[in-house]
Length: 559
Image (cartoon, rainbow, N blue to C red; front, side, top):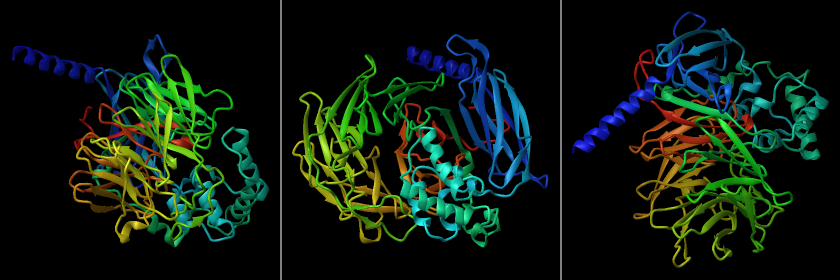
């Protein structure tokens, strides 16, 4: 007992010492009328260390922490290591004064900062994809723009007024920067649309605030929603845009890159990129770090799995020999239209999407079709009865669960018994059957959670009773892409269109949280040992984590 008491006391001292080694920035936000203004993001980027670091010199981690002002206009950015911080505010419809300030954070101290927000016209490039879907005028090419362009990025890349040639040049700029090359036919259709509605002579209002429907696309944030904290790091460039961050047992975070894998150390902000051998790539969609130090990659269009040895820094590539038949698809990127639209089979027959590991060490991959790969024997097994799937997870009993998203003729969730390879499917009730289950995760009780991309909801399936429960999400087009479960069985989701973060707590309470990003592109979410949910921000080349802090006075809080 004495030893336990000593250890407990030591833990308290270490915790207190860690908190004392950090500092914070606190202050107030006032509106144009001089009154406190709530729900304004305050962002603090660590730009320089207080002391010269042997690894980084004087340069900071460039970690940016984002918090919100409360109903009294108060904010606190805490848990900051000593050093210099670039601090600014962000709220659509306002501009902060000062625009930015440099703040010195000292150990155990709280630096003060204050901002006054001035009204400013909302710009079209500040809209979420969901808002743009409602407010952008009808004209030929609108559907192409929303489905082709808005799948990868949001309105943040659609700035200014340009004629046809100007929009063509803007799209070609993505090629010049190494991001992507737009099909000429698509580019022509999109440029004609944008020139018509956002051209120099367009009759579209300069600010979307002028439209009567502007008030219909706002989400009213609750007081609970103001307690979220986002922390992100800059990573990647060009085509290397992380859709998620997957923590390993050592605390490092792994990210998929276009033709390889990257790792970031959250303590230092240092990231490293490894590219696969030339000719072996084909678009990496996800990563799976395992306790043995290996990291598995799904090489999507090349229909391969790759194993990266983090110790030797070598790649092993495994091509799937199975020739999957073409599968009739639905377009997964059109939630703004009434229902998923059947499309012809895609040009690529087989593909790899997301990987999980079962209790025997086999690697299972979603995509087209469901497959199992034995790393020891190098044997593949395909499951033609699951021809096209997206989300995949393993439950406590070792069953492999999947969600059928893209296939036009199915829309079920299901499982595979790893001992018998028997496939069992469960069809959601009619009211959510067309919701198209996308991501899928398992909570600590064995419940299966899946994102209903076209149904504005997240659903739960209880295997013991085969009961479905649907949790409706507020806001326009809450199309959940990234989905995660934390250590307390809170269910997290990120909308691909309205950019909001959603949480369903164990009691079933749903809270929508604002996002500090105009466009996120978060593909998946994973929890680390500290309970933080990691995510990616593809259009901004960032990876980060979020958490909820306790409700308390921001002027006195310390984390």
